[in-house]
Length: 196
Image (cartoon, rainbow, N blue to C red):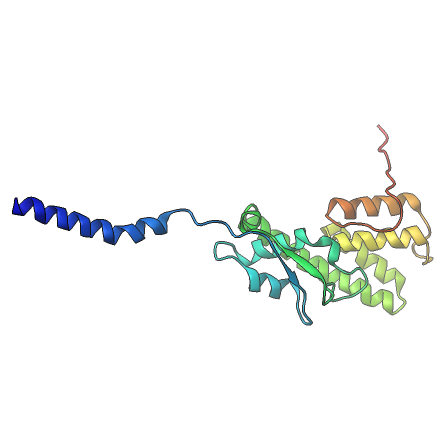
């Protein structure tokens, strides 16, 4: 009887000790999406670091934030994120949908394209449209949505002799920017049908 009572007490103690451990192994609830107001000095990297989920890499967080907020990035400023803009911070589940390898590659390409795009902005401000177009085209080729949008604007307006008004070229660039997540305000949604 004493042995049985001792076993019962020991088992009770084990269950009390194991209860928190078992509870810790239960799947954690995924963090929901939220929003954030951009502050002076913020950039995507600092925001990704600030809101990164412990289960996600910095590049996964960066990728998800960029994809969720394409519409708020400025076309004409080098900083691209204006203070006061409201950003969506994607849910943990959304962030983790993209593999680390895919996010790493995307981040590297986007940073490279961003540098080239910024060189285009500087060239355009200096009045060197040949160089600006070269940089915008190179950046768009890598996958920079805002560079595609800027090309669409330039060909739509025909404001530069280096980019004469060409509606077909404009539409193609706007379509590319939309496919990459940009919301294009301005000209109506025109489409070009591919010839067979």
